[in-house]
Length: 237
Image (cartoon, rainbow, N blue to C red; front, top):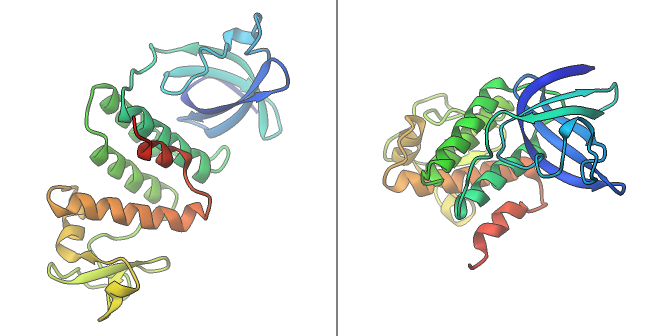
């Protein structure tokens, strides 16, 4: 496989041997691609792929080749300056990157997800509050990966949610009516809030309900290993 000047973002790097890096690249046309950037930490990097350039939040164009899952990075150039994320917005960007690392399969394109990711990064760089953009990103991510569910419909009965009803999330069926006494055993959500979220309205109690729901749903797919980026949010300044 050979790709030439494909647009994307670095979502993770790690050292490889003495002077090289393993680069995880999220591209629009090829999805997540793992590459070796040979000599990236040395004085003479191949194709301009220096460690300073291969950083998160920088719009890049990269070229690579190789038949195995681990490609060889042959060229890299910046499409624009790195997006400047400050404060908690840095952690929000790292959180999105970690979700992509943990949930995306290699070389599985998700153009809608890529465009949404880039749009959220731009919002964060402009100083927007991170919470609502992150909820929308999580919903798009779940839908693109085939884990989406109807936020306005009971997954068992097929009926529209009752504005005054209570529901809990079931891994196989999505949102289902919460039986009496379920609050002691399962997180539950008010129908009014879920219907608001389905319309893209995160005002009032819907904001906190969306955060709790997304955390519960993602945990079902992430497994037991905690997210490192989420721990950063908890650290005091």
